[in-house]
Image 1 (tube, rainbow, N blue to C red):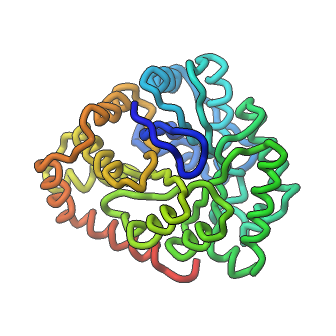
Image 2: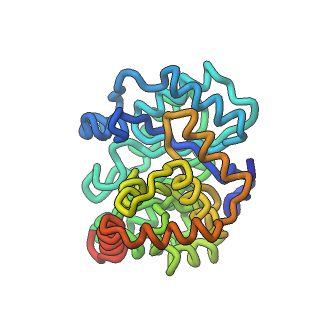
Length: 320
């Protein structure tokens, strides 16, 4: 494993991190694609998370030096907390999660995030699920509508983050949004955050224009996600006649990690063999000429063009 210092924090994280999603037979993530309303409901736990297959993936992650783990819904938090008692990490690990029911569009104007007692209670509830006394990274993901609705919103968020740190409940906070560039830039310049959590791949790379430079100027770490575009990468490749999924995954990871601003990339899998395939990129992170040619070929796919166009609209639209 290779490690990078995350922004101005005092920790180094593995350049490949582990997501908490588990998957249905058709490749869609569990929970969200079973019953979305329940998946984002605080306290609801789907059955079957954190079973033998997931434990094998965790054991492999530990064997290969992964030390950053991201979990979202409560089912993933509970499973990770339980699994860490069954498979004790041989070194210090770092966990990132979000306050459930408060982020993205799950709460109108993200008002709960701005109310300290509600946010504190939610962090404490998450810590019980994870069976930990503090959270390493709290993912604070709000939308542009929150900023538009409350001119003092960012000040409240910064105060809440500072108070959670002072009480020892969290160590660091990550900026996140689905509202695109303008919201990320306001988060970054607020001086409230230690890192940025963001979608980044060769079909969704608009962050290179202003977000990455702004994060680097503020010395924030960048945790990237969606290297495989939620599986759309493989459909794009199929369309141009390329079917070697292992090589596609490695190529995508290499492309992401080739950008110096990226600290780590979160990968999701519930297949031990797939994780080993992903980790094989560590042997040589340089993109080959053939891989660069393959990326250009994939860009001719109609699925790619449609995906890229949609992501451009999402990242640069003004009001969300």
